[in-house]
Length: 101
Image 1 (cartoon, rainbow, N blue to C red):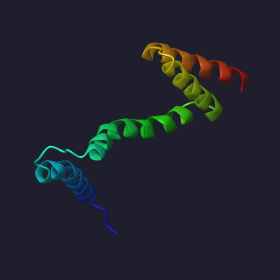
Image 2 (image 1 turned 60 degrees about the horizontal axis):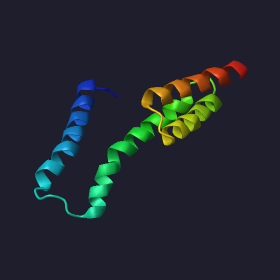
Image 3 (image 1 turned 90 degrees about the horizontal axis):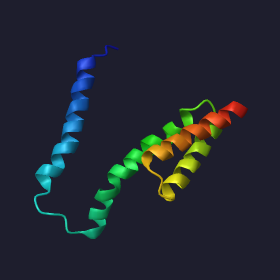
């Protein structure tokens, strides 16, 4: 079976372009439905979370240290720490946990 990379790239480009252009052409009026507005508002955050959380756990040598760093990072952010403070706390947790594992 012959594989042509250009066909794969063309299909991928067509699908990506269609997904991006269809809402622009089909939806002309402002969206007034509160449910759809809130759904569209949270889509970027959910997408970022789905990509980030597995990477946090699997980026370390031990998934336990990644999971503990995730818990510490969530707690630090919850209590108002800045992004830099959260990242330093997470790195410190991973460093300490991996010293003992």
